[in-house]
Image (cartoon, rainbow, N blue to C red; front, side, top):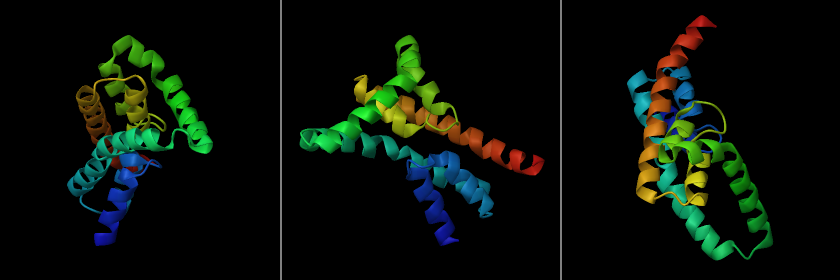
Length: 151
C-alpha cells in the first residue's frame, strides 16, 4: 500500500501525467478514493511553487547555455501558443480554466510556464493554478470510477 501511495504522489507530481494520471493509477490500485484524491491533489499542488522557482533559477544561471536556451524557448513558445488566447481574453481566470480542463497539455506545468512568460502576479497565478488543479482533480476523481464501470 505504501508504494501505491508513493507512486500515486510521484505520478501526480510529474509532468507526464499530473493528478490526471496519478488519481486513476491510485484508483486502479484499489486505494480508498478519498486518500487517492488527497494524495493526487497534494502532489499536483506542489508543481507550481517548485516549478516556478526552478524556472527563475534556471533562467538566471543557464540562459547563456545554448542548449538550455533552445529548450526553454521551445517550451515557452508551446505554452504561449496553448494559453495565449484564453489568458489575453480572461486574464488570471483564463489561466485557472486552462489548468482546470482535465486534458493532456492543459495542466499545472504549462500553466506555470504561461504565468511566468505572461508575467502574471505570482500570488494570483498560484491561486488560479491551485484552484484549476483542485477542480480538475475533483472531476477526475468523480468521473474516473464512472468511466471504468462503463467500459
